[in-house]
Image (cartoon, rainbow, N blue to C red):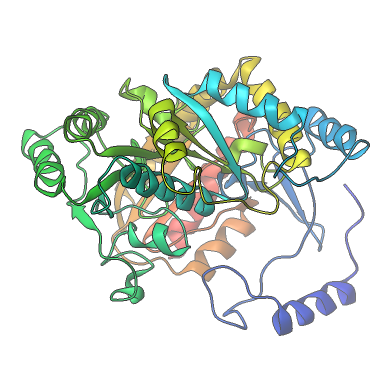
Length: 429
């Protein structure tokens, strides 16, 4: 890593940041100064003041191989020597073709066609558009609504916001502006026949107006880091197929091994009609997402009005992003990720177990490379973050949750540091 920036230079950066830079989910200017990152390598972030932090967030769930991985660095350099970008309308290139082919091979059976786009939220927009166009082409233009369950999160653009939790979610302020969708209750951790019946009834009663049902399989991410029983996915697969409603799985957070299966759908052994991927797709190097669909969905869209999907981002299929995604998927395909995630799961269970009895803790839960401590009150984010940083760990608590989704390459010592950082954050809030 490079030498740290001197104090006055850091102060100047923070002055400019405070004056001009708007950070996620906050006011302008922010309530507290962010930490200036100077470099990153392996699983560590190096702050401009010289402190090093173990990154417990995979910088928002994407950098599964850590930072400055030699294979990923080499892929970017090699692609830059050929071309960094070319439009995808009327043109194509090897990195995109290889990526689409690999995704079809890796994802659940039946997903044959790949639409590449810029970000996870846009990937969900594309999935919704696919569902609406497919239903319209099949002769059901009245099927314009989406079904889901409470507690979900699917992104910050408008249709994804409409299927986030309408009451407790971060987009509740947009009630009356967003399209009104159809919601079942929160999915329980255990399998309950009454809730399965609720899901089936939701689809059956609203099939005449539902284009699709969209859910995050097994793990609900930014809506609350909740886990639910995989059999609910089987229920949804059966009832949506019965009524001609499409099923969309949003695996932007869970895809590529995070839950202990390559895709969370694997816990249930079912395939959706449409699948959304992002985040870890490029190993955290560049923004890229993919929306996959089955052949019947693609045929319906292609035979309908307009003759194709009405979407085309400027940076669709960006060669740099596709090249590093291919390298990242190559690392996953070479093996080892399942053992890494299982080891992390064991370390998180061991390290977080003592917090079950800590003051203010409502629940501790672990699945794959996800560890969550749920408090019985909202977290004091600045205090919790500062406590974790003092312990040498980067965490990003939200609402009543202090959690970690570390890179798969995190060693046992650094994993212990992460759980200690969570404990420090719990004690501080």
